Length: 405
Image (cartoon, rainbow, N blue to C red):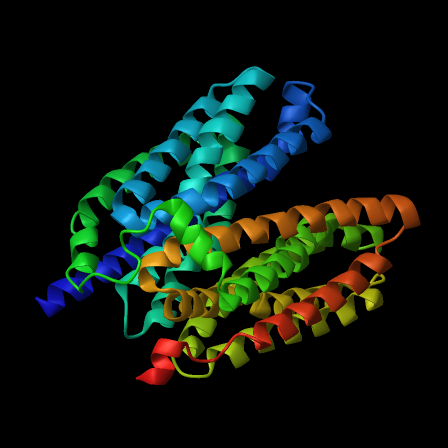
């Protein structure tokens, strides 16, 4: 029986990894197809980007509800349903010929699919299923979010180059359908495997009661506000503005794109390494250290003037500390806020990350338009990442239940 449970738990890890790879690739394909859409349909980049912004806001609102559903019913319906929606989104986009079809396909169908197949959903499902090697399992599963962009995106790029953007979306739709069918079979006992470990405190709480409980916990606020600043300094600032900044500094597009590839590749390794360390050291120290060392990387960016080597070194170092916050954050949420509440907690925390990302993306454009450069953007990123380290450092290393044991 024990062997069966372990197999089921690692099935959740495997499905989560592949599902995140496909979902994040589906989101990133927008950047690959944007240039062709402006030519084929006459759409502006601003219009296309606005649809992406709306999608991100929608996903942020959906995150707590998805987390609560993970708490109540497990990952099977959420992940397979999300894959079906991402596939449906890709299928509609493959045949679209109007902005309305794009909005429905990407913002509505895609927004639901991306919101269901999200890092917080996978990390919560995995964390609920493991007592031993929890951090390692979360790190491996959630590293699919970056592995998809590092591995699948070049493949999809070749498909797009060979047969056009419609063929690329058709390939994504087919892959999502196949993986959804496999996931539905592999996860057929996922809920039962978790339930067999016994009921956890807070299992029967309503959504409102659960959110109220979380808002009264200092640990939740420590994780939430540090993760909000994480969103500003990662997705909002670096993933949105690094390549434009590099080109502003005189570095051509090809080396800039290579730097982004390095960033995504190292991200994958960083998440796995952080998961390994989460199981073996003080998680509060680990999380605070990740934010602290991330802050130091921003001190390199003022040196980026026609220096491609500096860009690549920054991409490597930042990649180590970029998504590495996920395993210790999820692990602390489980131990301090309760296994039965981790989905809702991580959903709310991820919504904060999305808010911070939106603030960072907006700040970058506003600061550049106002000052003609990025100096204040990197200064703010250094300060806010340092603030995230201090906030994370206030989270108790051990929960009250662990301390009493």
